Length: 345
Ligand SMILES: Cc1cc2nc3c(=O)[nH]c(=O)nc-3n(C[C@H](O)[C@H](O)[C@H](O)COP(=O)(O)OP(=O)(O)OC[C@H]3O[C@@H](n4cnc5c(N)ncnc54)[C@H](O)[C@@H]3O)c2cc1C
Image 1 (tube, rainbow, N blue to C red):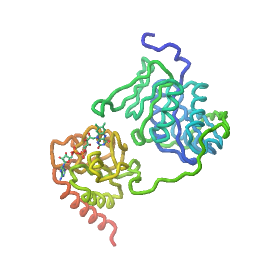
Image 2 (spheres, rainbow, N blue to C red):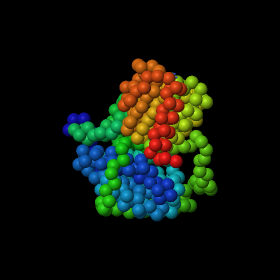
Image 3 (tube, rainbow, N blue to C red):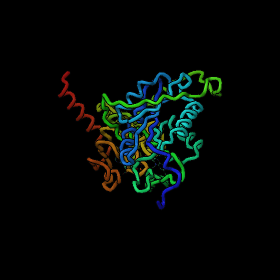
Image 4 (cartoon, rainbow, N blue to C red):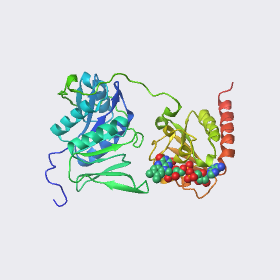
């Protein structure tokens, strides 16, 4: 068939790497199973989950619940904590043996490390931070869409001449599919084929991150973000108060982060975090494309901006044209009053 790369018929199936830490799965893995389900159905192939770790068989059951047809499981004490070498060895061995046509990995710190290493070892292409995945059914190719050239265009990338086609997707970019209890399927257990003595890196101590800047804005249900329009670092206090009354967290544009008004961990956008909260309030943010790609899939977006032509209003469900420094405190006060009416004290 014209345009069809030769020799790829042996590569079949869509795989999702299930990332876990101490037996607890990263939700992005389930989001990817949701996306993978559609791809597998379009291709008419199985959706498989790859579960690696120590004592992680329970994650195989969860993977079925989130849509997997089959699970490849490597359960070995050597995999208790993530290290590139043994995880890469496991992924590479599985891929070479079972030949999936597509491999999806969450674009977390761990996922970025593993995906890059695996793509290099397997001599295939990897499209990082995809925001859209679909199938060109005629050519049986994965269409991997992501922002390019500083976010000014969306590029659709194909891996035409190598297998598997590898893509990473950031957390909260894809919706999480509903969990279907009682779903089950075959579990293929594979040995790791590597022992501790063969691994050059040792984990001596695990020090958890702590501090203000490490609040996880990506998983927050409400994000109140400030941009350069907030005018000064101290005005972010107004956003903190609004976020507190809504049970949310404060995010920021790169403009505000560059000005030193918020830590980088709070930055929303292409070079920050992707958020998908139930409510996103953008205060004094112009709505540059690099910001929009990190928040435009929020359920509800409210924008407050002095400039009625600001691009943020194009994605907002509700726009307020005015001074954020005046509007935010009024909004906070009104919400406090509403809450006081609902819960009298
Ligand atoms: C490769 C690359 C990656 C990038 N990554 C990111 C990213 O991850 N995240 C990100 O945010 N940006 C990113 N940027 C930067 C992005 O292009 C914009 O420069 C940035 O988002 C602008 O921040 P801002 O909206 O706070 O500031 P501005 O664009 O300066 O907008 C300020 C807005 O505030 C409004 N305003 C002013 N005063 C008030 C007031 N009192 N009340 C209400 N509104 C007011 C103004 O009308 C204006 O619309 C990236 C750029 C590049 C090139």
